[in-house]
Image (cartoon, rainbow, N blue to C red; front, side):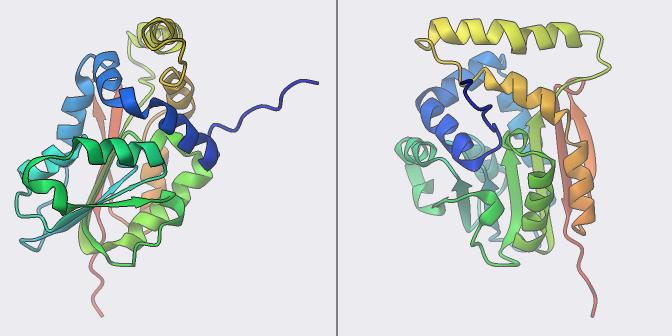
Length: 246
């Protein structure tokens, strides 16, 4: 009997995937993206609007090991706290181990599915997510958009960025060859037979770009602007939660 096909969007599958690759995530993601991932995190944070308070509360969804926190703290040095939410237990442990300096006590960790968060409504002044969107299918993206609209304060700002499939780009065949063929081979040799990071090929192909998430956010009542990065190899969505006059 053949083994049933795995659901790569099942929360348990996603949590297990990132648990396995947590220890090498920072190094391997930087190397395999040729350093672009750092630039894209910077560009994502730069898309956040200036908060209306001097001590903003920030939520980092699918926070991973916290690579975006230095960018947030440089741009918003007086931020009150970063609430880091991730479904992977090992990712949280790796994030805690790398905290240092004066900002460790400014990070609150929550191990939870972003689609079922217990964060209270109107909680965050700013919300960011870097490279977690691709692990959600269309229905999950719609639910995530509703969660973001619920969590943000009126007037609050969000920015989300994700690796994408640059359809229409002349060099897309080379890009796809790298993700689909080269990266899995390199990973198997460099990471002792692992094939977790090579899942990015499947995820990005299915994800396409952030346009579907942009539509879901707009349907959830948020203002949204979609942007391409490096010919569409990454795409981001940013915007605000409108203030409704009563």
